[in-house]
Image (cartoon, rainbow, N blue to C red):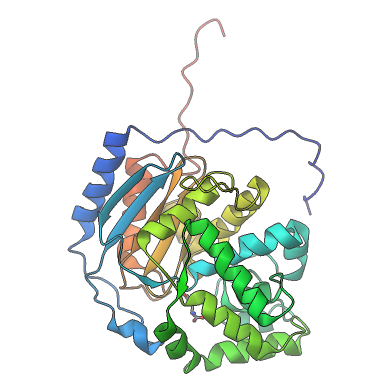
Length: 336
Ligand code: GLN
């Protein structure tokens, strides 16, 4: 373990800047034009209502840490946030319970298995593994502050609304459609209970989790939420400090390693940004200190990640120099 022996070290940050406003606007518009005609992937149908989405819906919104806004396409269309909520609920719980508690109680390692895997838990002594997959997300939601399920839900809703900078509403149709069909999540919650990983009523936890997944957002909302993580926890549109800078950093680290489920390694290798996807076709990708991209395009790959959104992120990562790991050698003078 290499945690906890650096508390006395002053942290410095170097993240660089985005290119000019004109260049950012142009790159977002180019990305939309370039991928609008791509038709790969399939719209999710295991939650029946999601199958009604039009595969052509496509929006990209980039928000920088100064609140600058660069939209292209359907950035005001509403859809359910789904698994993207996991990253922001993690942030709220990490802020209230602390980094070490989450590390110990949930875990921060990738499963290498699909988001709704039961096997991942079985192979790891009942560990929920990480907050970005369903088992870990259910266990994280159970840790949300609140005296009752209703209070926990209200805290999630108001917390995610602070990230978005507006009051987010539940999409009742999505909630009911998922509650009628989510037997697997109920089984995962029961398994968590059997391993002593949750002590509350498992079905109550599934209900809160399904509500958080059914919050209605736009690509613009996702960009503002992501930009809050890019800006040390301060919402760059409202100016509110939603979480602390350390929690923002922890959240981004977990998104980088686990945000795209079993494709997270490939994602980091190709695109190199913390990100989170959801089965309704939403995605958020964050460039720390610079800004975030919120995306919406319903057709998914086999892991449940929006296909067009991934392509756009690959393009913008390159075109705008967002890749976390990129560097170029400093030009050194002769007498340095
Ligand atoms: N609510 C969905 C589920 O639990 C979220 C999954 C996802 O977006 N990958 O199945």
